[in-house]
Length: 285
Image (cartoon, rainbow, N blue to C red):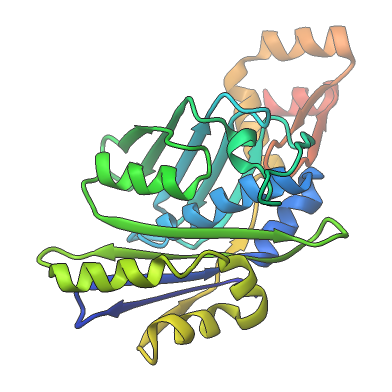
């Protein structure tokens, strides 16, 4: 079971989030046939976006994040909501790249260093909140650290990791994220930075210790609240029908005349929805 643990550290001066997203990443691998480097890239994105969704105040609030770089993997899209139901995909999920000289997966090469992160939060207001930031390295953690600094002016330290086994499955994925609250002292910030610098292999820590073990190892015995995120696509035949109706009757019948049916495949879960002429007739009765 995936977990998000949230608490306060250093006399309640900073927020702490520890995530285990191993099952979420394995579900993404299963749905999209991700290569190891693509699993690492999308997995890191899913992890940090799960943290961001954890900040939504209401269940119906929505988060949409795109990471559009110039790497071989193409654009990454991740969506979530206040219930921590997450889903994501990338343009080229089957790309494979050589390992970096240090033996690690080349996530930066997969994502690319030139491009932008765009974040949209829909929170029941007239206009959704939108923020954007240039990519720094394509390694995801550094890019979202920069996003929080420049777009939201919130000091944030992020460690993310995805570890893929020899069978192509994820054996450990997650992250540790610390954010400063207003008025946090320099002493608390330096102490947090020192701990975050020790998190060079967070995926191995998650694999061996789990989220609770990572929290205890690096931050000691603190009170926390536990949440359970999951990979869950929200598509349905009814939703697809509403989209088709918005296209209009003439366009749908034109597609049926040429193709024999209207076929729609969900990018988040690869579910295919097919509509024949009788189905379209019913839509416009």
